[in-house]
Amino acid sequence: MAGRQRRFLDRVEAGGLLAEVVAGLVRPPVLVLGLPRGGVVVAAQVAARLGAPLDVVVPRKVGAPGNPELAVGAVADGVQALDEPAIRRLGLDMAAVRAEAARQTAEVARRTAAYREGQPPLELAGRTAVLVDDGVATGWTCAAAASYTRRAGASRVLVAVPVGPTGLEDRLSPVVDQVVVLVTPDPYLNVGQVYERFPQVDDDEVLRCLEQGRAPAKR
Image 1 (cartoon, rainbow, N blue to C red):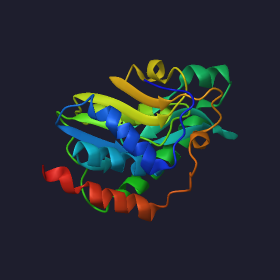
Image 2: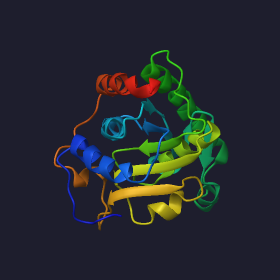
Image 3: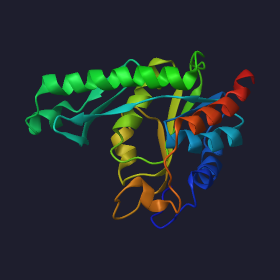
Image 4: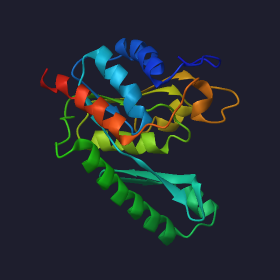
């Protein structure tokens, strides 16, 4: 389901193309969840195409002590997933890793409250959860987000992203039912390499997308 050469104008175009694929794979009831920040912009296109409500899930990468760009796990609301074999292999201090996980858990709570603006999470029980980001590097944050949806009662979990690494399906298979990736570049340098325009997304844009996307929640 993935190609190697496709490029996208921006997140909106990528979301529209992703939506066409996802529409053939899911049946109601569906809830689309965007991963902030850029993933929410992509997710808004998917939710609109499916006529499904849009919500947000906030995972955070847990970086290695002294090397924060190296992911050794991720956290989400009520979820902590650490790559303990890698932590041992790298000789990292587990106490320091857990302290970083705690800091990121606090940031998850802060950001979730800010994005939801006092509203409760939309109901996941019995629904298909479609998790959308603007791209995946290691897969740790998607795995944490998927674990959150499972705990919340989702009947099926699908991860949909415009770009990701080869083998992402195998990496996520323990917690995800299906993975949709439109592009798997070779070599894969970063998420932005497949976008003509890849600006930073600010919180105001995330909030606008969520406000518009919550309207179908009553359907």
